[in-house]
Amino acid sequence: MARNGKVGDGHRNGAVTGRTQVYNPVTEIWTKRDRETGKFMDGKADGTPFKGVTKEK
Image (cartoon, rainbow, N blue to C red):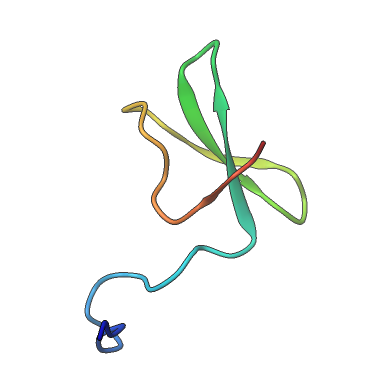
């Protein structure tokens, strides 16, 4: 049976809440966005999606 591990072991259990990510095909960058304000927060330069962040459709 799987377990979540100990608190403070250096990784997250579950998804990040309050944020989504969207892919921009023009710049080929995944961009993180705040769900409440809709403001763009961060872009990922290597072209791979953020881990644990919900993707928008």
